Image (tube, rainbow, N blue to C red; front, side, top):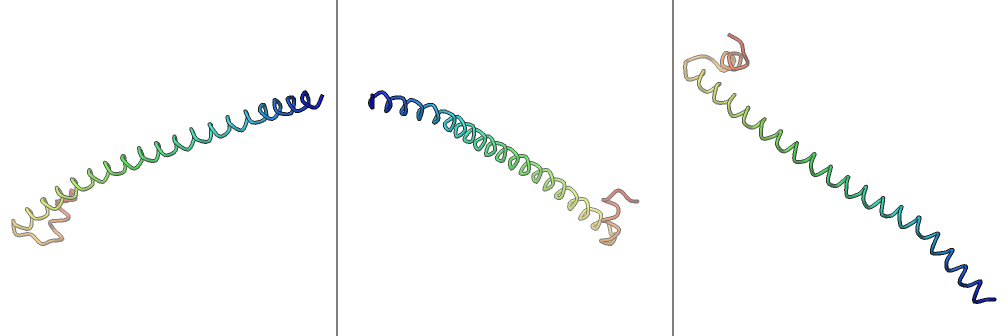
Length: 84
């Protein structure tokens, strides 16, 4: 009888562990998904900085060109921002 009770306890313990395994698996999948999402977001931010750098280079070139024509810094910046 004691062997029978021991086997029942063992089988019930294994059944109880299945829920924990599923929870840990779900946690792992969520953790990996969050990491991947983070990496994608950082890549998007980095690409955004590349666009800002290109725009900055173009603006600087515009300002230098207008200053070379004999206008002041303030006038050059105003012109490159879309003013007259």
